[in-house]
Image (cartoon, rainbow, N blue to C red; front, side):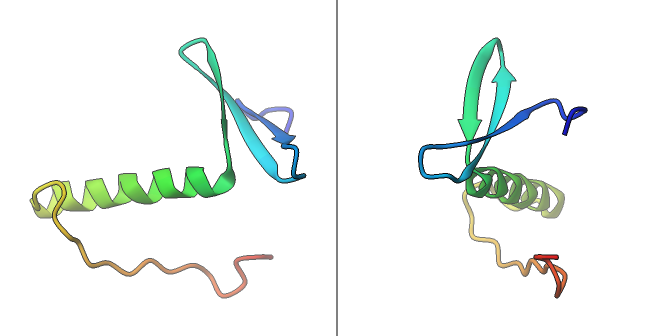
Length: 70
C-alpha cells in the first residue's frame, strides 16, 4: 500500500474509501463507484470499437473468476 498513488481510508460506516488527488482536489470514492466507472469505460470502448452510437443499448456479458473473493 505504501507504493499506491492513492490512499485507502475508512468512512464513518467503517467501509473502505479510496482517496485520490485529482487536479489538486481531494476526491473520495467508494469501491462500487470505481467499479461502475470502469464498467462504463469498458462499455464506451466496446461501443467505439463496434461503431455503435453512444447512448445505444449494448448487450454484454462480464464474467469474474469463480473464486473472486479469494
